[in-house]
Amino acid sequence: MIPVRAEGVEKVFRSRGGHRVTALAGVGVEVPAGGFLFVTGPSGSGKTTLLHVLAGLLRPDRGEVWWGEDRITGLPEPRVTRLRRRLAGFAFQRDRYLERARVWENVTVLLAAQGVGRRQRRARALEQLGRLGLADWADHYPWELSGGQRQRVALARALVHGPGVLFADEPAAQVDPDTAGLVEAVLREENARGVTVVVASHEALGAKPGDRMIRLEPSGRRGGAAWRSSS
Ligand code: ADP
Ligand code: MG
Image (cartoon, rainbow, N blue to C red; front, top):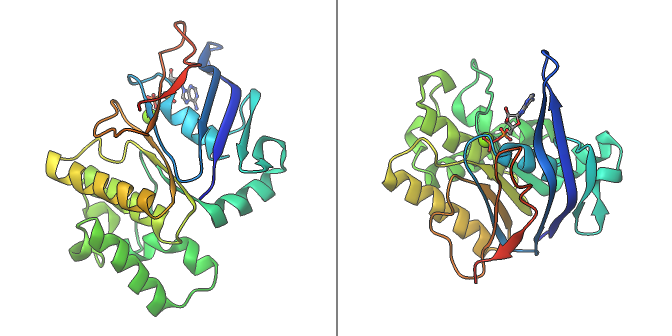
């Protein structure tokens, strides 16, 4: 439902040792409302950095990001956070959980902050966990889960408030092919409902005509400024 656009995005990290790592060197992307974008490239090529910049979690050194009419790179941090909570969902590659809270409670942290009642929260968590094959894990604790299960909990958490744009960072990197198929099906279902989907993955597995794709290269090589539709 929300178009996402970025132009000329640059991000350089400075390590403690004083090294400079160019994570993004002038990247542009455009995903129409209800579009599906794959961000691909080898490990270290900047996929996570790009997703964080597109989601307003990280400020680029240069370049602009728009969500529809909102130029989020020009907005103060608290407004970006409010917009993101309302409009976007982000499934982190390695999410952090409240280890003493149950899985379903972790899924609904944001809803709790919004004042949604416990019964409703649990129902909504179960709905998302169920479609990701995790219904039986709702009352477990995060530390009881495998890496792949935790990634799916991250996806459930990103979806539970019905976002207009979903960012998923390698959501199926640590799972078997059947489970990867399940994750992919959920991403496609959301997209079919009109949700704009941006997914980082090694390769654009299951890409369909009409999907967009950007392939990033590790720093020092190409900047990855080209994006294209695979159709
Ligand atoms: P990918 O997700 O494709 O594996 P990343 O976006 O995580 O790539 O990283 C891109 C490059 O930026 C890598 O060289 C990585 O080491 C570096 N990098 C990422 N985050 C940081 C950070 N917070 N501090 C320093 N370097 C970072
Ligand atoms: Mg990454």
